[in-house]
Image 1 (cartoon, helix red, strand yellow):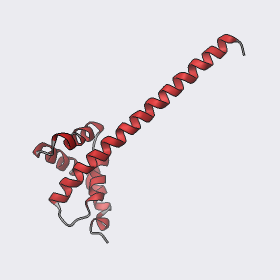
Image 2 (image 1 turned 90 degrees about the vertical axis):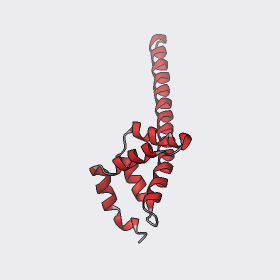
Image 3 (image 1 turned 120 degrees about the horizontal axis):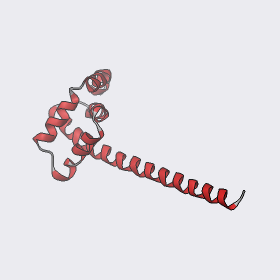
Length: 112
């Protein structure tokens, strides 16, 4: 392999490694935001439905939320949960994908 080809191959390897590390960083940031948003949603669900296993509902709501909504909800771990946050969570919970998910997990909700 001549020098020019080796140089190009090295640059391509560096670019690939950078893209991979960016993806890993984005995945880590997404996981942190989802985890924080789950904490907020879980608290709201627990307050609204005491005695119900809130984890499956929380998962359904988080899965139905957009990335922007997850970040917005996650920010409530810093700013505090207000009525706007509660309204946002309840709105997401009413979406067809969230309703279907909650219905599919209804036995889990009762702790059976």
